[in-house]
Amino acid sequence: MSTREKVKVVKSIMFHYHLRKGENTQYCRIIDKTLSLMPVELDEFFMRDFDAPLDKHWWVGLYSPASYHSYRAKAVDFFINCLRLQRML
Image 1 (cartoon, rainbow, N blue to C red):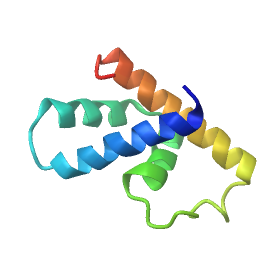
Image 2 (spheres, one colour):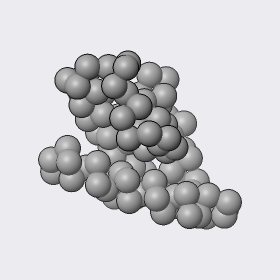
Image 3 (cartoon, helix red, strand yellow):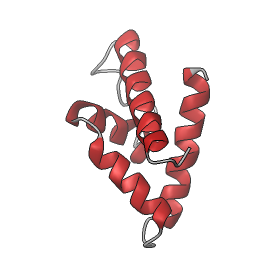
Image 4 (cartoon, rainbow, N blue to C red):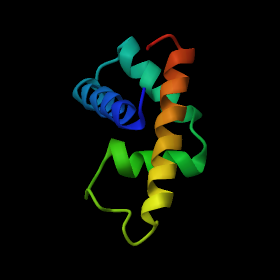
């Protein structure tokens, strides 16, 4: 699966997570657990990029395009791997 496809999957998962965030469902518990497992640097990046994106280009002053795409790929891969370990994907 390409990084672009993985990003689409993660965006979809996070969209549905926000729709159900107040509910005490297994879906929300798995996402919460996965987010809690992320390393600090990836967690901060993931939150800005997927969880609560205020601006599509928030990263422009902070990262070079190559660094941004590298961090994004790492964050997406980590998130998806954690979900696989929890048997969600």
